[in-house]
Length: 129
Image 1 (spheres, rainbow, N blue to C red):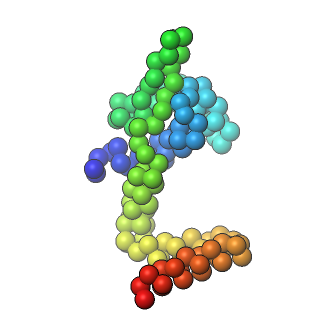
Image 2: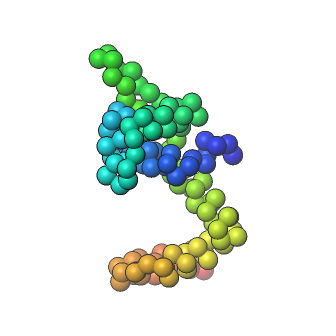
C-alpha cells in the first residue's frame, strides 16, 4: 500500500505516537502532549487530526456524553517499517548498513548498546552458518 496513508508526515507521526501510547484520547489530550515538546495551537492540532481522520489514519469515537476521542487506525510496526524504508531509500541510497553506521557514529553509544549490537550480530552470524 503506497499511498499517503503509509507515509505520514512528521506532524502526523507525532500524533500517531501519542495515540499508540494512550488510546483512545481527546484532541485536548493530544494537544497537551504535543505542547510538552513544542508550541502548537489547539486549532492546529484539531485540524491536523481532522485531516488524519479524512486520510483514514485515525478514527473518531463518539461517546454518549458528546465527547470525541480518537484512536490510531495505522499500526505502529507497519508505520515504523514504512518510515524506516523511506529513510533508508532516500537518505542512504538503500543501504541500511550506512544508516546504522551513521546513527552509531553520531551519538554516544553505551556499553550496553554495544553489547546488545554484538549479540544481535552474533545471532545473525549463527543463522547464516
